[in-house]
Image 1 (cartoon, rainbow, N blue to C red):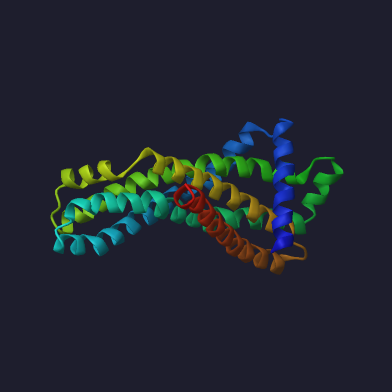
Image 2 (tube, helix red, strand yellow; image 1 turned 90 degrees about the horizontal axis):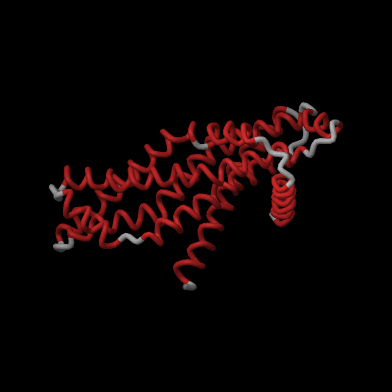
Length: 245
């Protein structure tokens, strides 16, 4: 774990150097943005809606029994925006796009395409990593923002259908509880998660040696490691902004 973390740090700085030297192509970033976030949009929004619906079902009746139905909207909004939307969207993108990144780069490694890049005096880390990291850090927050809106509205629909809570009362609770600070922190989380997905999965793929079997193993490890690193980052961000403030 320590060795892999060191490799991730080294690759991140190589990618940053490649970016500062302005060698990355804008078209590559757009292409990776479409592959990472746009292609994951439907599954991410579906997960956000279902998660909000489940939370609404769990809390609506209990809040109604205690006469606290006016707090339902705020509770769902806080849970969705602070944790569920950035976390679940990042996990969905990591499972779909992160594993694809790892498999693609691993396949390039075992078929000697990376060695061919080196003979052309092109830094393979910068060439392969930088567009993916930038694209993920920019576009994952966009998906998360849409997922937050879908989640809040989904909770409103479920509450209206199950306990007949008026949408106006629901939204009044959302506006009373929600702050722009929570939205900013959730977008920061999403950007960090996106960068980690691209960096960790690309690093795992880049370290692959062998053949087709090792590509599959590397892809599985990339999914596990990216999830682990996201959870650690999530804890640290929460610690900084919500505990140590």
